[in-house]
Image (cartoon, rainbow, N blue to C red; front, side):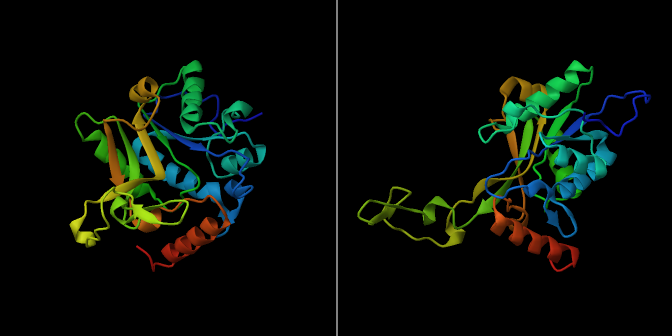
Length: 252
C-alpha cells in the first residue's frame, strides 16, 4: 500500500499548493525513464528535490502520482509523498495529464484537504529549478485577472516564417501562405512553444476549465537549454550533458 512519510498523528494544516509530479511506469519512447539514473540519482528525484525546495518557501506538499511501485519507492526515498496509487485507467498512453491532476485533487478533497493552487511538474524536465517555479508563481499571483501560468520558450527555427509544406511531388510552398520571403530574425514577431517544464493554476479555475490553457493563462519564458524534454534516449543523453554542465558551472 502507498503511504506518506507524514505521520498520521500530526495535526493537518491547509497547504496552499499541491506540487504534483505525474510519473507512470510505462514509457514507449524510453522504457523506465522515470527511474533511470541521471548523474547519480533517478530522473524523477531531480524534480522531487526541486519541488521540495519550493514547497519549503510557499507552504506546499509534494506528491507523486504513479501506477508503479518502483517509482513510488523512489519517491518516498527522496521524501515525496505517495498517498495513493494512480488507477490503471489513468496510466495508459492515451491518459491525459489534466485527468491525473483532477484525480489527485479529488483524492485530497475526499480526505478533507483543499489547495489554493496546483503545480504540475513533469519529471521529464529536470533542468528547471526552484527559482524558475517561484518566479512563475510570483508572476501568477501579481498579475490581475490571471488564473494560470505555463512554461514557454521562444522558437526560431520553428517560426512560421521559416517553415514550408511539401507536396507528393516534393515541391515546397511557404507555410505562411505567401511567396518565399525570408526576413531577418529581427524583422519577425517572436513565437513561443509550450516547453512543458511547469503548469500552475488556481485550483478553482482548473476545476472549472479542466485545462491550464485559456485566455487567462500567462506564459513564463524559459531559456532554450531548459526547454528540452525527455521522450527518448537521445533526449536523455542531451539533457544529462546539460545538467552536468550546469553542475560544473559552465552553463547558466
